[in-house]
Length: 308
Image (cartoon, rainbow, N blue to C red; front, side, top):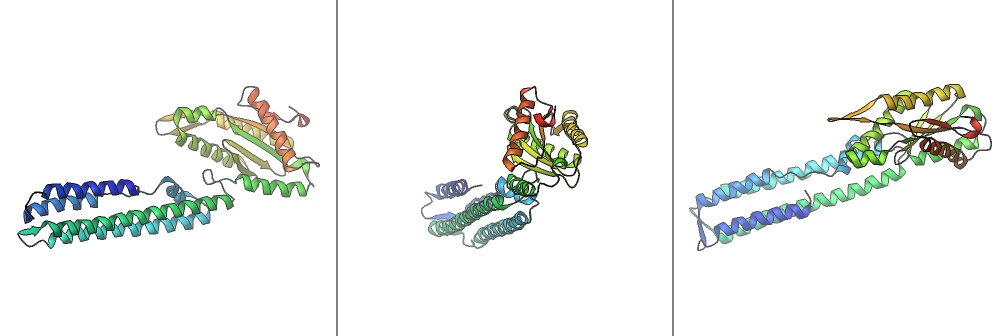
C-alpha cells in the first residue's frame, strides 16, 4: 500500500467518524463512541502494508550484497509493522480511557487527528525506505557479477572473461562459444505475460546448468539471449553438447500453474581463433545464430570456417 492510498483510507475513516458524531450538540454517548472506535481499531489492525516486487526479489537473490540488503529491508519492514501495532494499541487505549458517559466531540477530534498523523508519518517513512532500498538494488545490479533473475553470470562478467581469454590465446581450438536465443520469446511474453517470460528464462538457465560441466560458464547476454563458453573440449564433443541443449529444450515442457509451455532455442556456435578479440568472437557466434533463426529456428549453426 502506498502513501496516497493509506492517506485516503485514513481520511475517509476520519470523515466517516466525524460525520456520524456531527450534530450531537457537542456531546455523544459513551456506547455510541465505543462502537465507532472499535470499528476503526479493526480497520487499522487489518491494514496490509506490502513491499514491492523489487524487495521480494531481494530475498531470492544468491548474491551476498543482495542478501544483506534483503535482511535490512525485512528488519525495517518488521519495525514499521510494530509501530502500526503500537498505534492500534494507542487507539484501543483511547477507547478504554472513555469512562465518562458523555464525551466531548472536540476531545474525540483531537485524539483521532493525532492517531491519523502518526499513521501517515509511518507510511511516509516506509515509502522512503522502499525508495532507498530500490536505489541500492539498482547500484548492486550494476556492480554484481550475477544476473539477479537467472542466477547465471551477467554481460559485464562475459566482457571481462572474454578479455582475459583473448589476452591468452594458447589453446584456441579447445575453447568454444555458443550464443543461444529463445525462439519466439516475444510471442511467449505477449501470450502468457512477462511473469511466464521470466519463468522461461529461468527454465533455460536451469537446463544449461544441468547440461554443462562445472568448468563451463553461462552468461545472460541480454533479453532472451545467453552465451556459453566451453573450455578444454574437442569439436566433436562440443557439437554433442550443443545438440543436447537444443534437444532438451525441445523435449521438456515448462510447467507453470496450469500451463504447459513448449520452448525451443536456436544456437550459433564458433571456435576461438588465435586472432580473435571479444568482438570478433561474439560477432561470429551472433551471425551463426542469425542463420539458425533464419533457417527455421530450433536448430544449430556453426560459423562458416568451423563447418556446418
